[in-house]
Length: 607
Ligand code: GLU
Image 1 (cartoon, rainbow, N blue to C red):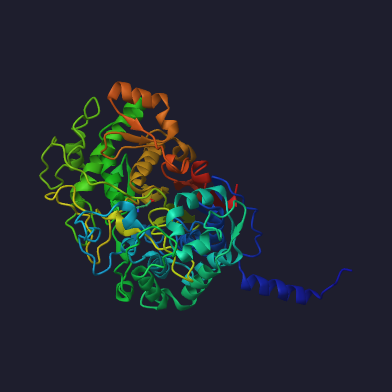
Image 2: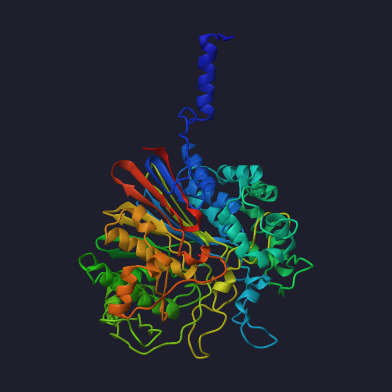
């Protein structure tokens, strides 16, 4: 039977509903997991559908891009626990519509006060530890900067509270999510490390210590509770609070599973290290490339300076008029030279005299460009230049290079809102599953970001800007990027992938700007990463392409592809996301169609 209500009652109900939830009246479209979405009202792209949905929910509920980015990142901590979460750190680049400014937040993990340059030197041998031994130890864990970044971003630039922005993640952690094959591949890749620590085994593996089955639901009530406490008590629940004390205790005495065969070294983090952590506002890097303003992340990330230098070098070539083979040869060689300078000069600028101005000076780039000849160089690795004016042209000597261990699985998320704000945010716990150590009862893994420091200089007399020190942050490659055209956001992009992040971002920018691909095409195109090595690491589709064959026969470039235990995970380079800011307030959000199982792009109002 139909119940009739007096008109006044209906009006009152409608009014009170619309006051309580001003946007509830517009019914949400049915969102589906897809790599590209075009429409209006705001846009999100991330590695994961639940996380992108969390961002869209916040945008629909009146949050801005900064609020939504925090909601996406917190949800990724639930659904992508091996690459994200409160135990890690990252870098956020933000375009603020009301001031037309690009600002950045450095939420990189920090070495404890007791760190010194011999952090990873084995006292028994006087030699650097093996990478894996350093990784699954308390020594590898830096003071997490993630929550400080979220809190700082929302306090300075958000439209809602940190508390509201954490709610979607709490919901997903409480309800659980379905495990897919990419998740299981990640578990397989990190299995020895997850198995070595009791709370990690309990949370992420079966009782027999094996990966969880595809299709099962993973609930994380511990993380839901951690987020709830952070929501209710603020970031000081971690920094200077009980959670910080628990993190320091876990680092000093990692909860090792009694049956493990791994040697696990204790760390040196104290509660006071955690209490003193601060996310830092830093000016962005900036270069002008073919009339576009490209903004990126300054040290301790090498991302902005290295992509910036490579773009400056490439400005001297008319790539769009060259054959694709020649243009890609110039891309590989510009990247090689920029990497030589990165390795020689970039570290945490609060500790090291990083010549930022020189590295981004077009005049310095000219002295590097002149080194690019008709074929790939044979004296390798190429030597760094001297980015201190006046610049000496074309130095030729080979130089020793430090080995690079950066992981290949991080995550990058992008958000744009209807007011014109844009966020480009790369964050990580470093290797897959970080240190492997879950904080007991807290539902999240701790990073191994300190292994991004060099363990020792390449030679005893080589200056190395990236050695550990108390309070220092290790050099990163994360390259969250925002491009402005005539002062307005045109494009935002970024990627995971450790040291390959820089080349992935560079390649996407060239694909889009010089080769005139659409953003989905620019992201999907096969990638190759030259980092001042004898060979260029290429994805299978690049490795097997005619252009790679021509680069070898005509220019002497040599390529390798990944062979290893966790294919195809390791044969992909990057799991990028981006947003193309189209005319008329429209957005095209873009995630990977294939790599890492594909990401999720959503817009508030599709179509
Ligand atoms: N630790 C790396 C960096 O800071 C990122 C790790 C990754 O992308 O997997 O550059």
